[in-house]
Image (cartoon, one colour):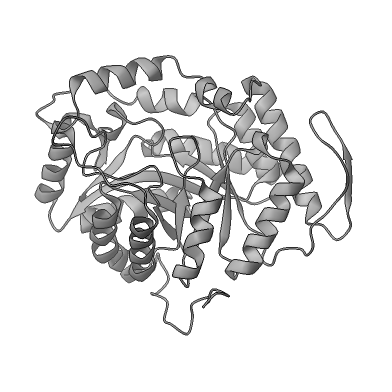
Length: 374
C-alpha cells in the first residue's frame, strides 16, 4: 500500500507561492494554524506530515512535539540536519519522541546543500565531507539503538557506550534524499526510504532502479518516496485555472532573483529541478507542463521541490498510480494554501486511490494509534 503524506508549513502559509506586494496573503506559522493543518490532514486520512528544517521555519522537533497531544493518529516526518547535533543525542531524542507519541515519529535526515544556510549554524564542511559525516552519523544512530552500547572511533564521531534508555519501538524509519552519487551511496547502505523531488517519470525511473540495485547488492531493500505539490479540483479546467492564479502571483523580480540563486546552487537535486523548465509564457501555465499533469511552475520562485501535480481528481490519481508503478511507495504532497489544498486532495484524490486499492481504507477510531497524552 502507498503512504500519502501532507506538509506542515512551519515557515508560514499563503495563497501565493511567493507572497509579495500590498495585497499578498500570509498566514503565520502559529500553533493554532499548525494544529488546523495537522487535524485536517489526520481527519482526511493522510499518513504523515513532513516538517521542514532551516532558519526560515519553526523548529521541527519542538513544533511537532507540541502537536502530538492535539492529534491521535497522524505521524510526523521530522526533518533535521545531522551535522548540528550528536548522533547519540539524536537517537535519544527520537527514542523518547517515539515512546511518548505512541510510535508516531518518522525521521528525515537532511545533509544540507546551500552554504549560506549551513553557515548560519556554523557548519562549514564541504559537500563531500557532509555526506561522509551523514553516513557515519547514521551508523552511530543505529548503533545507539542496538542491544549493546556502541563504541565507535571514526573520522567525524568518537563515542563510547552510545545507547538510549530503551530501544524505540518501532524504530523510526529513516527518510533521506539527495541526487548525487554520494547521496545514493548513503541511501543504499543506511536508510529506509530514499526520497526524490518530483521529476518526470523517465528521469526518476533510472534513479530508482540504480539505487534499488545498489541496495540489493548489499542485501538491503529500500522504499522510495517522491515529493510533489498538488493542485487538484473536480475538473482539469478548474485545476489549471488555479495554477494560472499561482503563476500570475509570481512577480518577475522574484522569479529572476530565485533563478539567479538556483544558478549558484551546490545541490544536484536543485540543478535538476531548475533544468526542467524551458520557455515560459507568463499567461499560460501549460507552458510549464513538462509531463502530463506535471507542472514546473512552483520552481520558478521556490527552491527545493518545484513541481506540482495539476489536474482533476482522477488525473492526479492517475499520475500517482503512474509513479507507484515505477516503484514509489511514499508520496509527500503539499499545496497553497496547505489547509485548503489538503481538503481538495484529501476529499478528491485519496478516495480514488483507495478505490483502486493503492491506499489502505480510512482508519476507524478503533484502528488509530492513540497518543499517550489523550
